[in-house]
Amino acid sequence: MARRAVAARTVPAARRRGRGGMLLVGALLLPVLLVTALPFCVLLLAGMLPSAVAAMVDRHPRRYLTATVAIVNLAGMVLPALALVKLGMSLAGAQQVLIDPRNWLMMYGAAGVGWVLHTTMPTLARFMLTIRDDREARRLAKETTQLVEEWGAEVGG
Image (cartoon, rainbow, N blue to C red; front, side, top):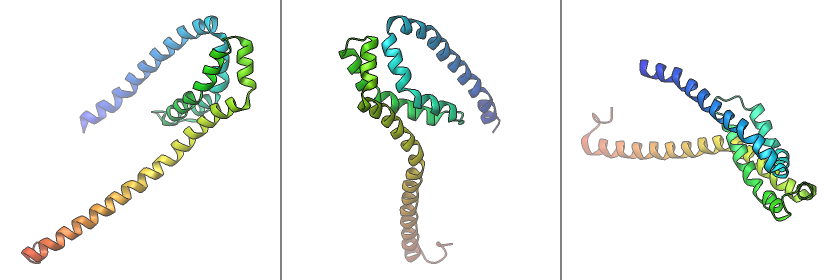
């Protein structure tokens, strides 16, 4: 019990250090990306807005909503980013990509899928666990009945 209490106090501090490292990497990487790949940054900023909203709304310490939405949103950014590369990685190319409504549908639709996944998976998991528990209860009841038949009523409790 005491070990759990100590672990509970030390884990958030370790996570805070990890976030600080990620913030440092982001702070160092952002200016480099802005200088070298401004059109990509513009596309990324526009396309990842649902992830930013999820980060603002998510209050869980482990940020499950943010992770789910960001990963699926990033997957929805692949095709628009490839289209930007194909158009020459220029601000005019970024404008062409951002004008196309299909790209917005991919980017924001993927983020919507992330929100749906985050919302529905706990219910689906609970449903699957209930089915498994019911099946196990029936199996144990059947086994108990067989033991009572074989050994007598004293075994059944």
